[in-house]
Length: 427
Length: 120
Image 1 (spheres, each protein chain N blue to C red):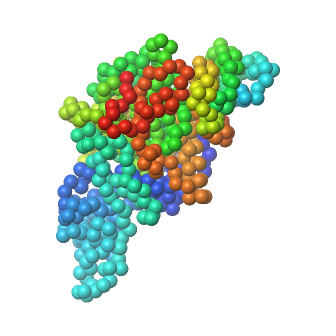
Image 2 (tube, rainbow over the protein chains, first blue to last red):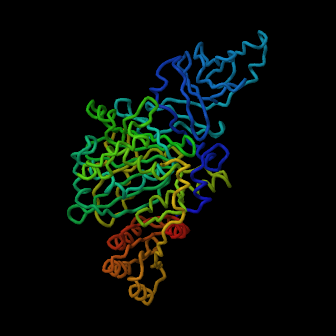
Image 3 (cartoon, each protein chain N blue to C red):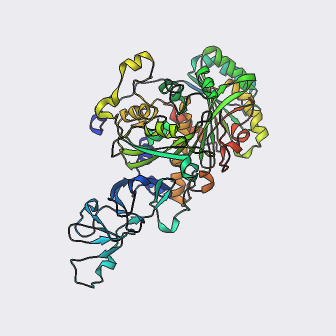
C-alpha cells in the first residue's frame, strides 16, 4: 500500500505539482513523426503533463509545439491555417511561428510593433528515431537530446507505435515492471506470437512457472531480474531495466527484436503507452514490421486517434471461449490490451491505500520509493533526477544464463549497457 | 464501469489481511534469535531477512528451510550494496538465493522501512 499523500504525489503531473516539475526535467515522446509528415500539414492537438498544446510543421519543415490557444481570444489553433511559415488563427488572422512568437496581427495597424510582444508558451520539438520529442522544463536546464537506443539506431532497425490508455500513467508503468504477471496474463502468447515464438528462452519460461525475482538498484532506476532454473545448476535470467521516470526495456527472446515502453502522462487520468521494437544490429524484416503494424507483440491495433480498437466501450472484445480454452488467459487478445484492459479496470487513478501488496511486487515498491526520493531531492535541493543523464539512457535489457552465485548486474554488466553495433544478450 | 464516477462506488474498506511478518537482521541475530524465529515461523505469512552485502548469511539456510517446510514466503533485503565489492556481494547472494523467493539489493538501509510499510 501507499499513503494517500504519496499516491497523490506520484500520480499528479500537472505543471504546478512537484512531480510535474520533475517530469519536466526529461525529454519525453510527444508525437510520432508520422503525425506531422510534411511541411504545412494539418496541426495536431497534443495534451502532455496536463497542458493542452498544438503541434505543427511549418513551410520549411520545422517543428513547433506551443499553447493550443490563440493569445487574442482563446481560439483553438487546431482550426488554424498552416501557411507561409506559421500557424494563423482563422478568427482574426493572428499568426505564430514555431517558437510561439506572434509574427502577424492583421487586425492591428499596419507596421504595429505589438505582435512582437505576444509570444505563446512553446516547447522544443525534435525528431529522433521516428519520434518527436519535447522538453517542457526551464530552457536553461534543457538536457542534451535523448539517447535511448531504440531512437538512435538507423531507421530500418526500429519501429515505434503509441496507444491511448485510459488510466493514470503510474498504474500503466507499474505493469511494465511487474514481471510476475507475465507467467499468468501473457502465458498463452509467448509461444504463439510471431514476435516472441521460437526462442530457446521460452522453454525456460514455460518449464518454470514460479520464477524468483531479484530487484537491484541501478544508477538510472532499477534492474528487475526474473530467475528460472537452467541446465547444470545455472540460472536463466531475464533482466528488465526501468529508467526513471517511465522507460522500460523488456528482455529479448532469441533473435527477435528488443522491445520496451515509455509511459507518458496526458493528464492525471490518461496516458500514452509508447511501444518500441528495435534490433541493434539488423534491419527489422518485412514480416516483423507487418506483425507490429497488425498489433502483434507489444503493439496494438488503433484507430486514427491512436485509441485501441479493443477498448473499454466494447469490453476489449472479450472472448470467453478463448479464455476457457486457454488460448488467452484473460480472454483479451494481445499483450498490449491484456495489460491495458486490466490496468484501466482499476479506475482512472487507483487508490493505492487499499492494495494488498506481496513480495513479488517489490519492483513496484522500489520504483515508487525511488521516484519519491527523487522528487524530494529535486524539490528540496534541486538535485537532477536519475534518468536525465545520457549514461542512464544508454542501457539494455538482457536474457542470459549465469552461474548460480553471481550478481547479475555484474556478471551481465556489458550486456546491460549499449554497445552500438553489438547484438543484444539473448537466449 | 472504470470511470472516475464509477470508482466512487467501489467498496471502500479493503479486506483485512492480518498478515504476520517476521523480520530478522542476520548481521546481528544470535543463535537464540534464529532458534526463536524457526520455532515461530509457522505463525508467519512472510519472513523478511536483512543482511549487509558482504556479511555472513549462512543462517539464511536454517531460516529458509524452516520456511520452506511451513510454506512461508521468504524475502531478503541486502543493504549497503554500493559499499561492498562484487565478490563480497556475490558471497552473500550465494548464501541467500537458495532460500529467498524475493531478493532486493539496495544501497540505503532506509528502504527497509518503506518495503515493510508497503505490506499492509
